[in-house]
Image 1 (cartoon, one colour):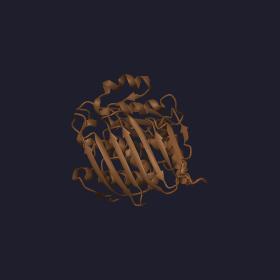
Image 2 (cartoon, helix red, strand yellow):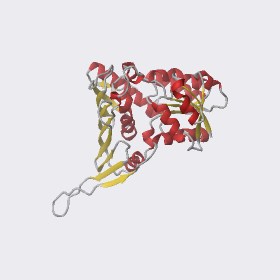
Image 3 (cartoon, one colour):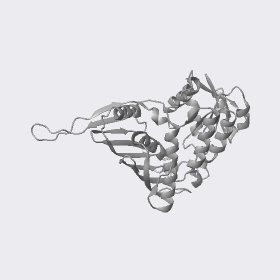
Image 4 (tube, rainbow, N blue to C red):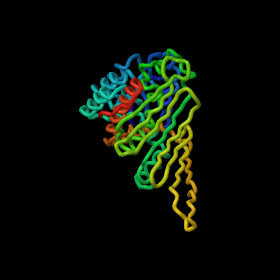
Length: 336
């Protein structure tokens, strides 16, 4: 059993704890610290977690194997380096940091210390994504020519203006930081490195930061990508991969529906009928539990975490380019 401490018990931190508390034989949370301990005291009592006054107390505790960071993005670099310095394994919510340079510092420090570094791209573990990955590897999609993603939520309407998630410095690139990076991660896994990007942001809901983002991407493979993300509308998720031999579409907010359609072939009559869709459903999957279980397994078995750090770092190179493009209003090349 991996014994972990968590930093940050806001909505997301609590979701991470609840995904494994009392349910997992692989990982448990023993210690926690948060900016407003009075708000978290009852939650910690309910889940058998000791609430401590500081992050330093978690780092000093020899019983703690790993640290989970569910904190503001701008704090990740310093907190991650502090954990690595005392050789605690580390799980960081996405994005790992807010630029490529600091992400590299964290990754290099973790490598030198010999600790597991995991970044919270939990959607990679979803059965719909796994099935899409398998079909791509089997060649059933053919050559990938384009990908289109939509990822939206309504969080801008209930996040308080003084909440850290609403701060412009915590959300460069608008909604891309909060939700669009998930779609980018899938695209990188399927199509490889991005060559250049063009990004446009907008503010659709009253607030201090942009909440709606559209990104166009060109990949070194020749594929193209389009990501639309917003935190100012209804919740939705859709990810479509277009290949020369078929398309795959993942939809619904919980990613539970996968549709596969093969390309048409010419019938003896000369008609080109569309083949029937193949539809698979994977309801009720807990991606948070899956990613934390995989983190624990990587520590226990000394195996690589299933989200490669190389992909994470390339994603941060793309992130840098997206932010620059939003500021400049132009195409920006991706420089690893």
